[in-house]
Length: 297
Ligand SMILES: [Zn+2]
Image 1 (cartoon, rainbow, N blue to C red):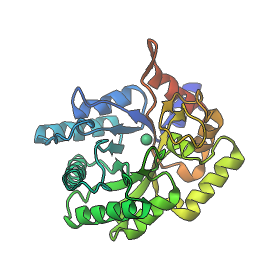
Image 2: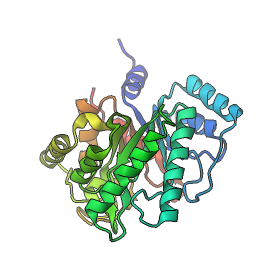
Image 3: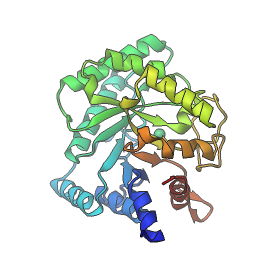
């Protein structure tokens, strides 16, 4: 017979659940930190996400990361790209910098054997949706043609649709994918808070299934490789991206129960990007435990 403790361990191990952790104490340390939180998945930035400055990896960093992966057993790892990247930019300098930054990210993540790189598709800055979409797709085609960083899959993230940001409608993401030649190197990262802010309801079983059926018919459920689980500080369709603790925002706990128990997403890593603290309380632990408690055996 299973003891209560073993039952809990089994329950946790069967779910790929993690959080975004810092690499400030070394890239490898993010894996040990994730492990301390009982995580089976991890997201990191492989460089400072708020600057253009690139980072080259030493062999020692790569070795330490590989060793940490073996020791922790965490292989479901995503790297999130810099927030400055805009592949839809028509400013020539910004566009070159964006392409270069994404190439560097794919190369770095490949060297670290990170299976997924998450990218916000880009913002058309007034040029219009169609132009933005084709600029993003052609940029990805150019980057893929360089044939570097092949070891990792580029995931386009669903966005909240702030300003002229693209990726808030499932159709925009499928249009980008349609125009990318090497589409096998692409996938989708779905963020609960972003799709909700973009107007896709997931608050109860009926709306959840409607939204995921739409996702399936427009993009294809098999294209979904990572899920970001965040509640939203903003209402449905607000088009504003503000993450809230699990179950404490406008989405509410029932959507998370549906995601955690959807058999289609059993092998899809689920990662929280919620605020790290609330007052003095470590809220990663609280949010992760809330999600674990939702898993039905
Ligand atoms: Zn996200």
